[in-house]
Amino acid sequence: MKAFIALPVVWVFLTLAVFFMAQRLHKRLGWAVTTPILVTILVLILFLSLFDIDFETYDNGGKFLSFFLGPSVVALGVLFYEKLDEIKSNLMPFCIAVFVGGVSSILSLIFILMAFKAPDVLMRSLAPKSVTTPIAIEIAKSVGGVPSITAGIVIAVGIFGNAFGINILKLLGITSKTAIGTALGTASHGIGTARALEESKLSGVYSGLALCVNGLVTAVVTPLVIDWILV
Amino acid sequence: MLKSLSVIFLFLVVGEFVTYVFKIPIAGNIIGMVLIFLALKFKMIPLEMVKPASDKLLKYLVLFFVPYGVGLMVHFETIKEHWLSIGLAVLGSTILTLYLTAFLQEKLEKK
Image 1 (tube, rainbow over the protein chains, first blue to last red):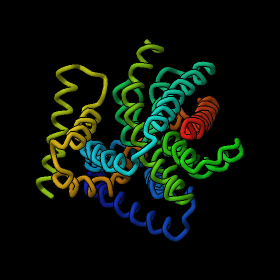
Image 2 (cartoon, each protein chain N blue to C red):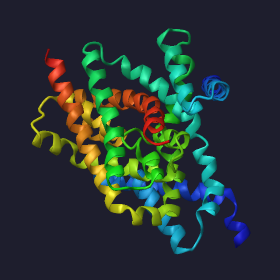
Image 3 (cartoon, rainbow over the protein chains, first blue to last red):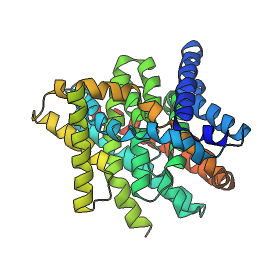
Image 4 (tube, rainbow over the protein chains, first blue to last red):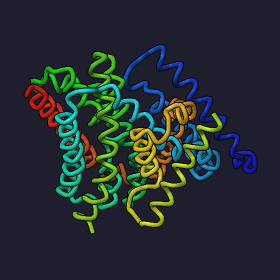
């Protein structure tokens, strides 16, 4: 049995199968907490814990899937190009808003963790918490964070933005559809953007571009900030 | 499809090379992402040259980071030990980012 579960195909198959079923479930229910990625990860962790299988064994197969994260991040560049085409006017205020939002996300997270005297590795792992998971993972790797902690928290942030972002903004007096979209994309990446798209087409477009721009901003700024604050 | 996939991997390799040679603290695939964006923006390559493969990759993007998410199981102890500071930092920082971004966008776009 040990030799069998060491086979990569076992885990590639299981991941595909669970992900497929999670997508079906999400299509039927449509709740923020049934986001396929969250359900898939929870089911897999539960499965591995239940049968007392360690993560290294799973990753024998898992690494064949995560390998494709590399070319997928490059593909995001193509997506950015297409998104940028969708917004013709008002680019400057938009870029300022996303830049300030993105940088304050990194700084506020680090300062709050410092106030709690949390270990360095948490700041390095969570500084990119607002950007799309593949980019956040790469940032965490390059600043000495733990990519798995990053991935878990980034997904949680997305779900939070998706479920509560619009209510929080409206409560704080924000009414503009473009502002709601920009904020959701900047603070809670693709999962938040899914909610912006439900709000209105305009919010969705701004949110999609905001997640792109903040991905870039955070990729460039995080190593600088980490270098500057944590030595 | 094969051509567009080759082009994407070309940008990935170039990105890794740039990171390697200049020792930049930014991941090679992020450099590749910026380079492919610039190449498209300045019409050095046509969109059709990369779109087939990039659309396919993006369609399954979520699947590719499942293993990192599962890897969280190794770090349960760290999370458990610091759950309160993590929770407050992530919550506070996310709400601040949401509000600040929305506030600026709303104020600036009206001018």
